Amino acid sequence: MEEELKSLLQDIESLKRSPSDAKALDSIDEMQQRVVRIMNLTKSGASRRSKVKDMSAEVVDSNPYSRLMALQRMGIVENYERIREFSVAIVGIGGVGSVAAEMLTRCGIGRLLLYDYDTVELANMNRLFFRPDQVGMTKTDAAVQTLSDINPDVVLESYSLNITTVKGFEIFTESLKAQGSHKSGRSTGVDLVLSCVDNYEARMAVNQACNELGQTWMESGVSEDAVSGHIQLLVPGETACFACAPPLVVASGVDERTLKREGVCAASLPTTMGVVAGLLVQNALKYLLKFGQVSPYLGYNSLKDYFPTMEMRPNPQCSNFACVERQKKYIQTKPARDAAAKAKMEAEASAAKEGPLHVENEWNISVVDDSEMETSNASSASGALPEGLTHELPSADKYPESLVVGEASPLVDDLEDLQRQLDALNAS
Amino acid sequence: MEGWDRNTKSALTQIPLLSTRAGPRDGAAWTQRLKEEYRALIAYTSMNKAGDNDWFRIAAANPEGTRWEGTCWYVHNLRRYEFVLQFDIPVTYPATAPEIELPQLDGKTHKMYRGGKICLTVHFKPLWAKNCPRFGIAHALCLGLAPWLAAEVPILVDSGMVKHKDDEASSTKS
Image (cartoon, rainbow over all chains, first blue to last red; front, side):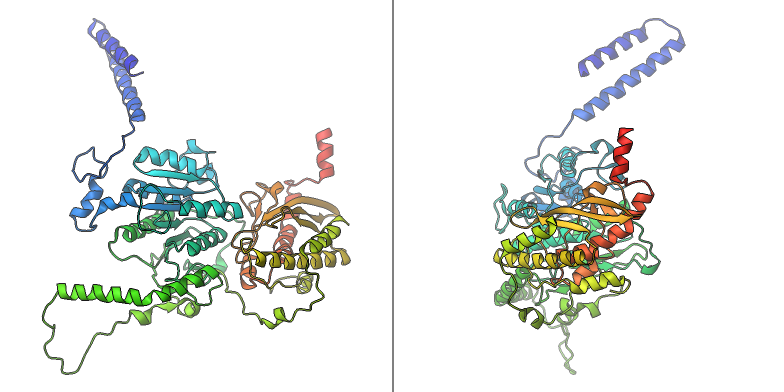
């Protein structure tokens, strides 16, 4: 193809040199430019950059990582290249998940696991990432196609399945456990799970898997009216799990009763989705590369440009058994954690040994750490939510247990018998 | 429960409540939960039959009881409209309700998610969350599917999106 175009270009060149009138010369010039344009197009289509072995900080146009490695020189990140050792699972490759995947890919993450059961539709085109020519492909395959073009260094795994079904959930947890090529100290095969799903069922499934595996994850969401969103860090046993308290939503700031809910077609905006994906991946990068403060909860209300933050402790009476188990383990390891924290504090203190700030303290004034008091317990959080946050669902009513225990015994207690009874009813 | 009609309310009070908090991955506890599901379904079905208000058939489609299939129907202008009914029990059941599907209506109404999952978000999900783990499949049909059919089928029929099977047969013949 390229050869042919080159010879065509030569032919045009020779035609130009042969005597002819000015008008013909103009059209020959135009033809020449068109051939050059086509040549450039074919070149850009064919050139896929080869893999890069080591991330270089060299500032040249051809280095895909120079601007990222500059984070080290700026003193933001200590060792940026570590990003290649990390594996991140993204559940839900929709408006938020696909953009998060692209951000992590461009950052040069080591391995990405992508989960979704949906296919790309034209109705998705108001959001970022997917292209009209990918309509009909599974979202995971379409994402792998684009992402591997952008950065061939990233190992991509695509899982087209529904994690809320029993079978899908099994494959999901197995794939999280499977160790990738990078051996590291982590208990599962991934360093972080990002939940970018759009429904409660899938969030609860991610929550279940992460509680069982002791896997840290981050949850994200955009409201149905597309004007607010949130991200949340969930460390099993340490912070509230998704089942500890009814999920929070950022109130949109308009009277809920004035909102018309005709049909279930949710609204979406590329802007809100992009903002939430950005907040999510920023928090993920801070968590993985250990810089700045990782937000435990960050809301986004676009109507008022309000960003509420809060912290949630786990609920000791959480209905999720795996969560309660994780909480017990977390409490058990408290002495070790305290010792480590103390050692770290002492090391820091000795490093920065200075004289006391004030030699005299006549009135015994001291600074009290109030972080302990501020963090709220999830079980009592309903009254202590920051302004602008509300619960999405009510919490389960307390129900007198006696009603259950006192059930009469003459009930049929054989599953097959019960099945037959229902079949008989169905048949008549 | 404000805003619910008297019939639904009285039907609801007669469906036995469940007590075991167990999902399909919980082994023996799940079997116990399944028994309770059957008891509730049997009670609800017999009650409907006795009240001449029979409107669905549902049975487990696999031995584990994680997949359920059947039919449901709604009478509008003295004609009966019947639909295939199916759903999976989610791994996080009963914390999350089953997502009831009417696959034949997929794409015919916007009050539905992909794959024919009916929208339960507003009228049913908060109730389910509030009554976990006491509500089961029978309650989901009574409070989730029944009001959905009552609201949507008349609109679907009147707008011509759903045709009665007799009309459909004659229209294909002619």
